[in-house]
Length: 221
Ligand SMILES: Nc1ncnc2c1ncn2[C@@H]1O[C@H](COP(=O)(O)OP(=O)(O)OP(=O)(O)O)[C@@H](O)[C@H]1O
Ligand SMILES: [Mg+2]
Image (tube, rainbow, N blue to C red):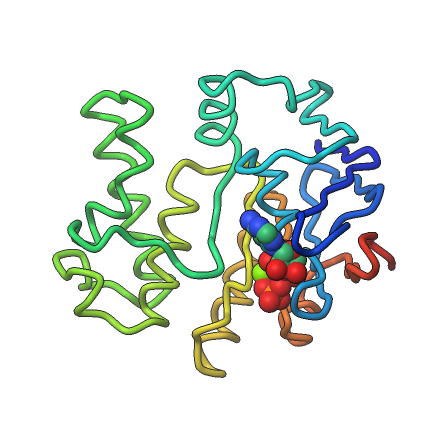
């Protein structure tokens, strides 16, 4: 599904973060990436989501090199294939929970029937994540953990083939962290959604089929 061939990324102030990193993700894989703070997990996620570019190396999605995509092609790739949960969950403050969740749909110009179907799917996901009833609230009216679950629902609304989750349990208490881990596992098992989960939690990492560590710019088993 996704093949990363020797990507390198440096930042001027920091030096080399990713060093000829290799990764191969098969359809339906679930991969945990752990590693100390600053090891490059978020940098890697951003590169896979085409939010940032590596200095060298190549990136293939379903056989196609994606680093040469135009901005429009990148947006389409993200909208069709990728679901994002960001480390600092990015809900737009002036939109309600419902509007935040349905936001990725507006980019895709869908029909009214499709919208209704997606809305039903959102209801189901809201129920599964235990945040039913938050639709009309604004981000400042909900807790950090609730906001993180809203971003999960938003990430899944387009049924992505690859979910990129950056520290998705960071602001959850133990019980909700466990629930979210179980939700990710059942999503992977039931729908075959592939996922890469960057996390400091060994409990969450243990729920993924593959566990890799980002160290000195490379992923090691
Ligand atoms: N846009 C940027 N400009 C300069 N340096 C950056 C930038 N983004 C990341 N870095 C640096 O690159 C290194 C890797 O950062 P990254 O956010 O990928 O780490 P991480 O593994 O996600 O850490 P954490 O576990 O704390 O989330 C850090 O030293 C960071 O300061
Ligand atoms: Mg990070």
